Image: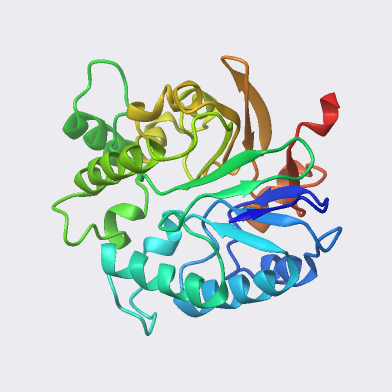
Length: 284
């Protein structure tokens, strides 16, 4: 798919968490700035399949193209969700909903943005995590024990089931292999916009209030992907710390909406709107 040639902007947002009434109202107000705007959604739309479908339906009707990659919350199986699919089956069910809506996913051919600053290949990634963002010298078992002792345990341990894989890190390894294979098929002459729910490098987790949580935030296997795959920019969410940082000269953008209490606490301007993510208009 090629688009954006008529103008418009490439915009991104993540962590919509539409189960919160305030967040749902914000999503209802989201509008493109032009008919040619694309919207990248970097995961955590919600937990219930009906909520996810509601938000993607609404936004796909408003933006010229919507690109989605899952976060950990979409992969949860809440006991009161009528859809009780787990693991890979749940993910594939959500991909099916996206395809009915015309929303692009990590399973679809990569779209090429040819608007301002293009062309760039938009690469939605679904990679999960493998507990390797942990203290030096600590094993996975030791890092998890430390997290339980500190009372800092991600809900994924109870609600994100890896079926049919034996563990979440095994699922992560399978996703890494498949994604690397697919990335080799892209046109290497065109820069990429890499989109993942979790940060591709560990450094953004260094400012977490609870460092034990970092092990649920990515994998060291992607530490050089922004260089290996010629990234013009990298988009992520998950941490609920919206900001822009630079690694090896590549711009990394955390684009989360996050929880209402966080927005009220930090009062950061622009957290309730998609961000212009490409090109870097601040340096235009």
